[in-house]
Length: 325
Image (cartoon, rainbow, N blue to C red; front, side):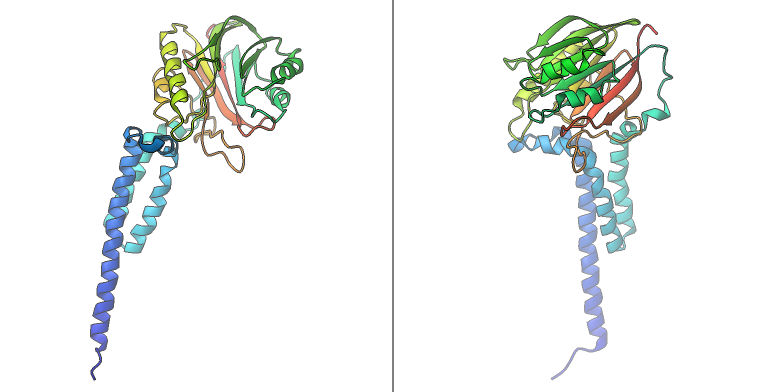
């Protein structure tokens, strides 16, 4: 009986190791390619079985592919692999980098007269609508969504001294320190009203305001939301107001293809301290931005999120320079 010598065993081990590295390099290159394509073109992936909702919403998190691919590259001891990791990294920075730069780095100086607006989905059933309103009472205008029976009355009672003007439509309400005029409910194609528009009359001019509580979005069940956002975008395009703000729970992330019609019409300012300003869920940590402040014709000096009441959503708050200041 003969036994393989040490040299032949070493050759087989070396060949096996080389084969494993070749497999790792192949996985790495394909992973880098697919990650890059997903980052750049997620919004045109067909909506098969309603998966577009998750593909689009997860887009800000695709950066996680980069450290995973880097680990593979180091395991494969591949310089080409390390270079390949740079492709999705650069793609992600090109798409998302401008949106995560802190607003504080280049925000306009505060003017003499400003308007601060806050918005929150208060989560129906918590009974904490008034608590949310009081936590946001420093704002000039407060928009609350998911109002249930009695919520609007409790908020009005809590804010009567500071925000005497209000307008409520269905699950959406506005409370303001300034006079509200030309207030109208909006249907947005649902057959019932979950949005409104009004004119906020300040000492330095008026601002057209839209408040929205978009229909829920679930896999294979986001048609009503898509319809609402599309109709809202059409109304905003037709609105000739020089100063305009749209706020609320849009049930869509900034990367959702259904949201793009809105960001093509209005601008969403960066966050004060940078990053994405995720607003939901509040616990254990926010992972998606469903609540937005969009604007046109105004200088935004601040834009941030903050906890209020007992909702599962964080509130969003923005401050703008008034047009006449």
